[in-house]
Length: 234
Image (cartoon, rainbow, N blue to C red; front, side, top):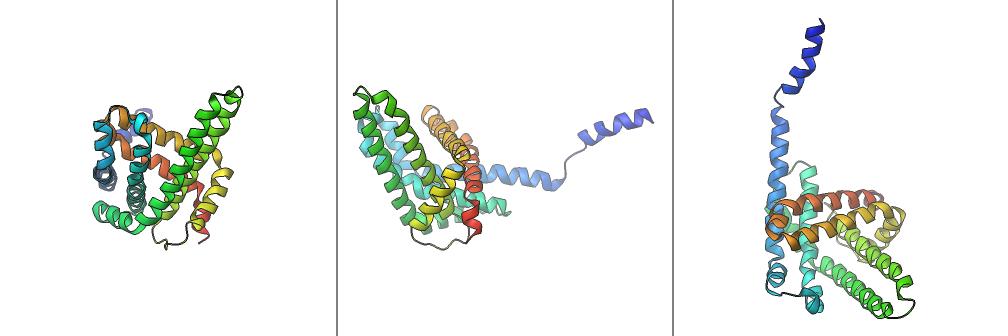
């Protein structure tokens, strides 16, 4: 009996997984890889500019404007993640439908967020040259992170399946409240996005084709939990 009892856990461990498990794993990998490819295609002008320009910081206004291409691309990726949770692996159609549908509002949100972060960054540079600059640096950093978190939360709400297009303030107001309420989760999402951007800049091929979707999924899933009350109250 003891030998049989000891062998049972081993047999359960070595038993092949069910077919549904393999299908789910392969579907997840497929959606992740295809989403990476579509993100690269949607953001191709930005990626090409980053590859050509040696010092992007010297041309930051140009790159700040060009980064707006990321906004509708992110809504497409988030729509694919939501569809995967519902059991759908139709990536191409889901991505481009969300891209076309949400592009105007996503671009407007991104433009406002990028302009605000740029102003905060310029103010931080100016203030840093004054005697009280080091004391005010945390304020500018926190404000920029808050703007980025609200922008991400608004894009997540915008890309929710079945959501009817509405006014931008109907996205920003609940996002601001919920991000401030669960700031620790919002901070985690922003940290993951910064990590994704850093990986893409350092290792473009590996970042775009392998690591981009997993990191974006973590940021999307965390932010979706943060803004869940706004989604459920519709």
